[in-house]
Structures are given as C-alpha cells and as structure tokens.
Length: 207
Image (cartoon, rainbow, N blue to C red; front, side, top):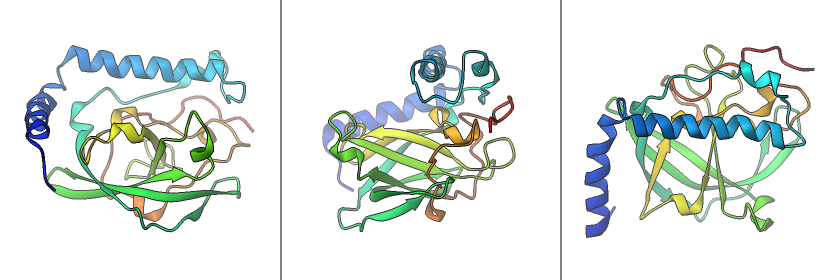
C-alpha cells in the first residue's frame, strides 16, 4: 500500500494518539456521547423495540482505546452480490464492499464490510457500509447473534479506516422478536474476544 506524505503524517500522529486514549478524557467523552445518542435514537424511532424505561437496561464495556484500530481497507469491486440471511428467516441483498485488515495483540485479523443493495438507492443512506461480526464474547458477555458497526464510504481515507469496537452495538433482535437482523457471515467470526462496545441487554427480551 502506498502512502502520500500527508497520509504518513496523519498515521504517525494517530499512532502516538492511540496508546494515550485509555486515559484520555476527551476520548472517553466522545464514546459516552456516542452511547447517549445511541440510546436517544431508540426514543425517536417509531419502530424501536425499547421504551424510555428499557434504556436503563442497556449495558456497555468501559471505553477502551485498545479496541480502536487503524485498519487497512482493500476494495473488492468484483465481489458478487449475495443474499444475507436474517434471524427471522428473511434474506437481504448485499455485496461485499471491501476488507478491513488490522492487528490484535500481534495477530493479523480481517473483517469483510458490506453494502446493502437496497440502501444504495436511498438518497440518505446510499453511502452506508455495514460490518456485522461475532467474536469469542458472543453468547457469553455479549449477544449471541453478534454485533454490528456502521460506517460511511467517507470514513475511508486513502485506504485507511478507523475501526473502533467501542462503538459496536446489538441488533434489535437482542431486545425483541419480530425484526430482520442480518446474521454475521462466517468470514466475520473472529477468534478473539472483543471486550468493547455493547454487552448483553440486562432487561427481559420482548416476544
């Protein structure tokens, strides 16, 4: 991968910044702000599975900068569209948009990132990218059906994307039946424990 001089300076700055984020109050504030917005979205979406009282049962790992990575992005323009099954039994049309590669404790990891072929026609969500995954916490401290991350195409800068697992969240199927939640493909099953982001819902699941 080739870097421009500007990209090199940005990467050097980011690399110095990352280790400090475990004690950076600004980073903690950013993650907490993100989580407050996440909770607020449940109260404004008419299809939401949660009411005001239910949001008290949302639970998260403490913010941890060790789970933020500068992942190398590789575009996959020749990928063939496919049907991604959901936990309700329905299927949704997706295409692999690219691959994210990062190192975790010295081990090379990769995750596929996808584009919903229905949303690309939407004027608001046309640049939305979707990353569903499972890891070794799935079914233990986190939802067994996996967790999600959302991005925009603009989050990719010269083949680098910030991959912050502190912002991963549960699908609505973790809170209630009746939703079409995509099942993370086998390619996105990590053999590591991602102890960051949203944990198991503490409240009763609705049926």
